[in-house]
Amino acid sequence: MNRLLFLGHPQGMPLRMLLFVLGLAAFSCQLEDPSTPGLLVPKTVDQDPTLPSLAINGTLLHVETYGKSSDPLLVLIHGGPGGDYRSLLPAKAVANEGFFVIFYDQRGTGLSQRVSRSQFEGADAIQLMIEDLDQLIGHFKKSPSQKVFLMGHSWGAMLATAYINQNPAEINGAVLAEPGGFTWTQTSEYLSRSNKINFFSEALNDAVYPEQIFSGRDDQEILDYKASFFASFENAPGNTIGNAGPYPFWRNGAVAFNALIDNAEQVGFDFTTQLKAYKPKVLFLYSELNRAYQLPWAQKVSGVYPNAQLEEIKACGHEMFHFAWPEIMEKSLTYLKELK
Image (tube, rainbow, N blue to C red; front, top):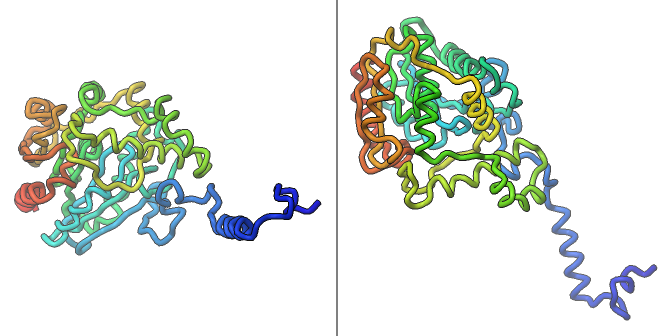
């Protein structure tokens, strides 16, 4: 059968239509397979070998460092769980003040390698992330006398405290910015007041269903893509946690977030059992505009540390590293240099 006649024109396809179809076919040939990694969200370190990475504790983490490796270590620990360190990158300026600054995307988050949900389940789930941090510190620490400081934001401040609780003699100081809580009871109370998000709600699934058809086929990649839609909700005008607008990130590790929250609801956690043994002063930061936090909550959460210095960061909300870095830099350097 003559294919041009079959297309419906009695004398064949008009020239302009033929050119359009041929052009469309040529364009279509250049399109990537929808299952190609990186079309929905950025590639991870195992998919893109040009990204800086480090093999730690059986997985591949996205890691960057700044400064002299012989200087005291300052490890940045991002929030989430499931976030990444992109919004914390202003802290690389601390390297110019005599610190070796280390950034890493936690297991299964950001640009680090995706892992199975099972790694975030059970009583040992958080312990695995504590061990990741321990091995990261061990990799970069050059001598027993080299000091180590932690700087954590939100969930990252909780993970820093979980580490200090188990290793109080290993950390010389910490900057903790708005941890939700150090027990699950505290954290669930804070979440009830803040922008608690369900990455897998039916409403969200309905909202982004068309994108699932046209983009990628990897289940975790689709979930990470869906999770990114929450940025508009979390940072909308009038949001509870006081964010002035969007902040930069690479990828929300949706599986890590959902599994760790589910796990906490089932088995709980308590990062305070050994904190009385921690003697160094801790700098505890809270933001002026986060209505779910405020001074009374900061006092309650920080009170488990024997020596906590509370400081309010003015005119910003929860994402203070992005929106108020100069003030954080000033307060943190004053604190860190006292202990350096």
